[in-house]
Length: 378
Image 1 (cartoon, rainbow, N blue to C red):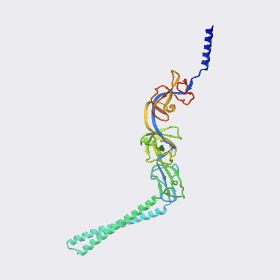
Image 2 (cartoon, rainbow, N blue to C red; image 1 turned 180 degrees about the vertical axis):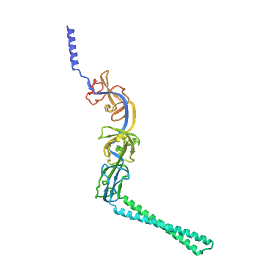
Image 3 (cartoon, helix red, strand yellow; image 1 turned 60 degrees about the horizontal axis):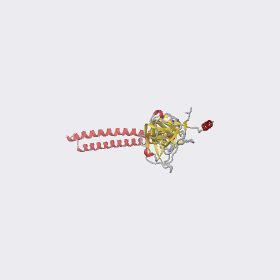
Image 4 (cartoon, one colour; image 1 turned 60 degrees about the vertical axis):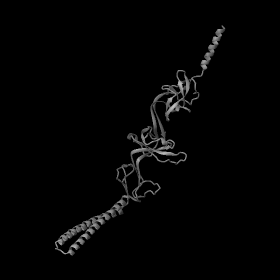
């Protein structure tokens, strides 16, 4: 009977232990697979969307606005006159000089025609002189007259050149009173009204432009890259652009320019300005100059490699693997390759299809702990 009592006690103890045994820890896991891993660098401070062609236009000389041909949002063509300041005096001067050019042309015709006649007369008298039919004095007088007429013709031509040069000077002065579109685009901003007095910006003192003209056929993002990361970047490298205004990432970009100097606006965070141009027209759609944007330049890429989420890797390149056969956690030291914020390439330490633990910060996640995979979130 004693052995029966012993059996009962053992069974009871076993039952109590079984009911009170530590439950396996539930951990979030992800199956290890293959895919693309890229090595990238990003900007340290927010960048800005810019247009490759943008002009802040103002007349070359100050004056009262007499003609304003555009409004904000207007689409213009290269050569269109956007704004004109009062220039009636210059137009009147140009009309006078144009009339003087006409008169100078008439004097050229008159003088040069007379010179041609005098030259023919001198030739005729020289021929008669050779036959001793006229005196030497008459022939010399005709030759002198021809030379004088030729000089008068040349003087008239010179006066015409002077008149034309004066017209060119006045036309230049007239152009300085006009704001002309230097390229096709749309008017982003107008800071002038008819009757207002506008002036060009003084050197070193930025002022509002009379007309802000943008051509958005070419869009790029200018962003600061930390001086430590900048040497690895080269012109032509692929890049992605992210914007707060849009949820999707735009990855048709490429590095178009790397500034040849280091910005030191902040002494402890020196940066190099990097420009990324967006190549795809569909990705440029909806982008407005002035949007805030971030860039991610791709330095290298490895395709079809074993990769794990970067958040699963701990300090010292360690990670936890759930051994589904033993139901225990195994701490592994990994050999890693390329890495970014999302994925890290694993060269050695884990195999494809193993389960890597994602909830690494959870209490109880230690080497050898009993664990089970948490149900997938619905």
